[in-house]
Image (spheres, rainbow, N blue to C red):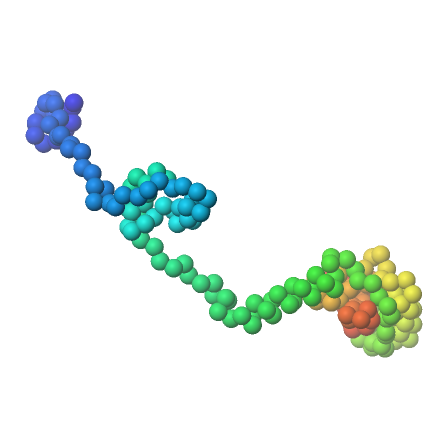
Length: 187
């Protein structure tokens, strides 16, 4: 063949003179019995056919060298079991209390919130007090209105639209009591 990389023939027109001799690198590998039975197939599958530095096929024939392996790295938070338990309990509480829907209310309680007036949601303090008391009374009787949404910032709160562009934030306890916490400006 024309092979200019072989520097034996400067014109590259002579036949290739490299003769490769077969070399059996696995001649010293210990022989293994073929894999038989469920347990041996399971072990072969999970250990990748690796044994004593060689990799074997299912018939016991060496097919290569075993890769050099070590232990995989630990998860960084796995060394802190309290953090795992804390995270799991938070997830469990959220799923248990809400399950993606507005929770049922056994009773609702109210407080006079002057900042509802300060934020411009209501014109006067008496109007704010009257509307919030009426809303709380209706929530106790009928549950949250259909326009209510879960608060994305707090897992245990529900936002109810009220007044002039505001929302009332109710915190729902495990016992079903909804407490009016604050009035916010809706954005």
